[in-house]
Each structure stands twice: as structure tokens, then as C-alpha cells.
Image 1 (cartoon, rainbow, N blue to C red):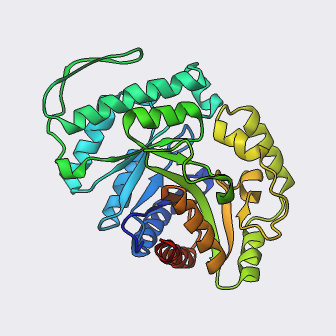
Image 2 (cartoon, rainbow, N blue to C red):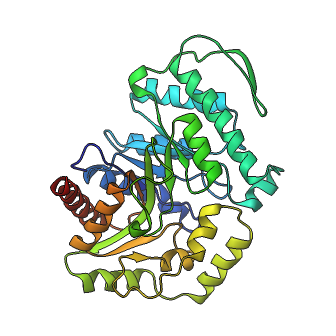
Image 3 (cartoon, one colour):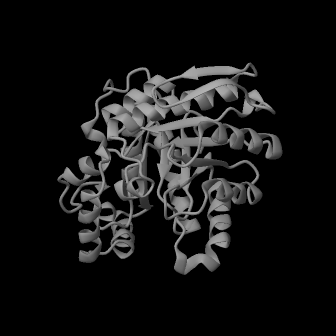
Length: 338
């Protein structure tokens, strides 16, 4: 986007078995749109139901010039050395910087299937050790030693080394105190599933940290048109609402429970909208409205220290055109207010 201090990431389509024949084409298409409209990178999901995020990241690199895959990394799936080796290999083979979305894992059924019974806060303590090893392997050519509660390595080094200019950006969920502590300890960007911007203050618990939010956007020139698009894309869905309630029972994610407890009612004069989340169509809140209204809300988030934005999966190229417009407006609003 136009402001170099703001980084915007789109999200790669999720894999669904019934759409397998179109998945490769769809990923390439969304990646090209994302790059064309100024996104820094694109989030690639990782859970027990998705394809391997590293192979999907390679597909994204093959179909773009500079877009950075933001690969979700789950400690239960691979050793930190393997992650560092992937990052180094991508950098050397393609000259492309990666971002890492370090996830502790909030789907208890996925973790149970892997026989991972680690409690929520302990998973973030494990994530801190895991991330520390990855960072040290990628930042220094010297052999490293590490002895923690969860990992131990002895005289481990990364060969061949990653070029320093390709050192990855690192994100950690910052919606819980344990997640924030992990982000602080590792120097990662803390990513939240946000509340309405008015519920934040300029100081808050992120002082001294880089932070961002995960949010969907539906914007049009006209307020009524934006809401019509939103209602058409996300109609009332009782079955989806029941699925959401069931998912809440099988998740120990703090962000899931926090968003579920918010009372936002019908849209009224609100830009902030939770129906996609509440009907299990999205994992994040949405901002809906005219370009000016959505840009004002984004500017308010930026004003409270959020400079990284991870968008929901863009359904069309047109949606990214509108999103680019509102970020450009938000950047101008912030400049005017200074």
C-alpha cells in the first residue's frame, strides 16, 4: 500500500477437497491480485485439514514477483531446525523473503490427534523457545547451543546460511497475555483479532511492541452498497452459527472467546461487524461501509499502534481494489491528523 510504515497481507484460499481441481489456479490468482494491489505478503494457513504451507508458499512464489508468503508455523508439526532450513532454502533458491506466523495451536481436536496435551499458556512458552532457536539459526553463522524446557540443541548451525537481508518477519498471536509475553520475548509482531477501534487507547499493553490486526474489509463508495454486498456474501446462517458454537467448545483460544463475547448487535451506525465470524464463515471480524467510514476506522487502529493488517481471503480482484483505496485514504487521514 502507499504508506511504507503500514504492511498489508492478504490470505491464501483454504483448501477444500471438493474444490481440489481448482485450488492451484485459485491460489495463483489470489496471489497475483494481492501483489498487484500493494500487499506485502499473503498468509498461508496450517492445520490438520490444510495442504503443506511450504509447498503452497512455493506455488505463490512461482506466480508472483515480490509477494512474501506468510507461512503459519506450528511447533507440533516440525522441529525448529526444519523451519529455519525451509526459510534459508527459500531465500537461497528464490531470493524471496518469507514471513512466519508462529501459532501455538488453538484447535484442541487437531492437537489431540497429534497427542499434544500441552496446556494453552505452556504452548506459548514452547513457542518462545521454538522461535528463539529459529531466529538464532538464521541470524548467526556460528554454531548455537540452547537448553530450555522444551528444546535442546548442541552446536547446531545453519548451512548454507540465509542472506541477512532475507531474515524473516515474525508474527505471534497477541490476543492473550501468554501470546503477548511470547511476542515480547521473541521480538515478534503481536497480531490480534481486534475489538472495535474505539475500545483501544493509544498506550495499551503493546507499549514498545510492533502490533497488527487480522480483519476482513468490505468497502464501497456508497455505504448502502457496501452493506448489501456484505449481507449477500454473509447471509444469516443458523447451521453456521451452531458450528461456531461447537467450535468454541473445542477451542481454548482466548481470541475466539473474546470475540464471541462481544455485543455488537445489528450494524446500525457500526463499521465493525461480526456475522462472518459468528456463522463460521470467517475467523476474523469485518469492517463494512463506505470508503470514508472504513478508512476512518483503519486510521483509528493505526493511531493506536497497529501497523500490520492481515486481511481475510479476497473473493474477487474488485474487493482488493476497494481495500487498496481505503488504505490509501486511511494513510492520508493519519498524515492530516499529525
